Image 1 (cartoon, rainbow, N blue to C red):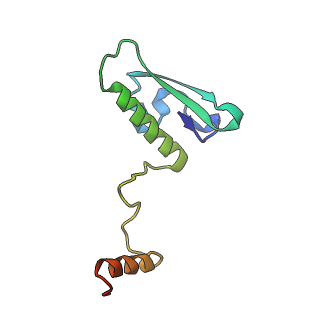
Image 2: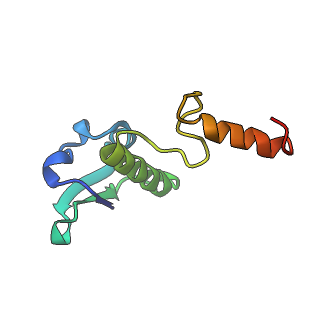
Image 3: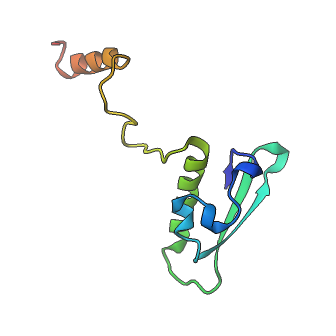
Length: 107
């Protein structure tokens, strides 16, 4: 997986990786390389030869995705949930428009 961060900003030893990947540190071998064309850092996670858990490959893919999100944005982004549900002055026009649409024109 390619992470849009220079190698100096991507952890080296498994103990310093964000939690999703650090939880799999005993099950995978990790290595990093600079991505071609200075386009970030490539992170490789490979199952250790002695691991036979059939769910491990899916957990590795998920951990890599979540780790990339943490390193690039600082949080795990949830596609099916709004990033904020707090009412603010700046989202008032949107809230009013949604309420208007749901009620068939009544505010």
